[in-house]
Length: 227
Image (cartoon, rainbow, N blue to C red; front, side, top):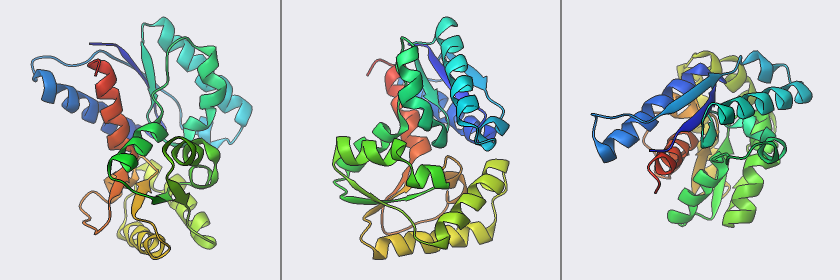
């Protein structure tokens, strides 16, 4: 098995999910008598909350280089938003980042989806580090919530979900947003916050919910097993 580096901590709730899903995915293939070699560096979530781009970039560059020196053969960032550093950090290391948007775009193509709604915090929904890859590399359109919904989603992600607070009110908000995106033509929904699949884990809908956490973990398992 190949050694995988994991950059976690933003949030630690999501990092736990990644660790569990990767171990379970490997066990499905080789049995529970073994588990994969993983190197985890957990970053203080305050780094991302600072919104200091230089500090964020410096931190992720330093951690990625440390993971490479420690023996990691590839890296996963256990969250959506920190992928904003991908273009700057990838050239500074000699091992690949397994990008969450490519895992998501591949699944959208597999399901023959044409237009995806995306939910998450504001940088993830409106930035280019997720949407551009899905649109340009996989030819799938991405649409975002409108108006005040962008701010409300950002608030719920940053002030509740990443702190492990999962409420019925938040669940109702996101179910309404999913319906709104569906009415605008979305035939699938990107759960673009790694805590959203936790919030909506028991929800059954009539359109696909693409859990970036699950899909990214599956990509990690494929790498570890050399698939």
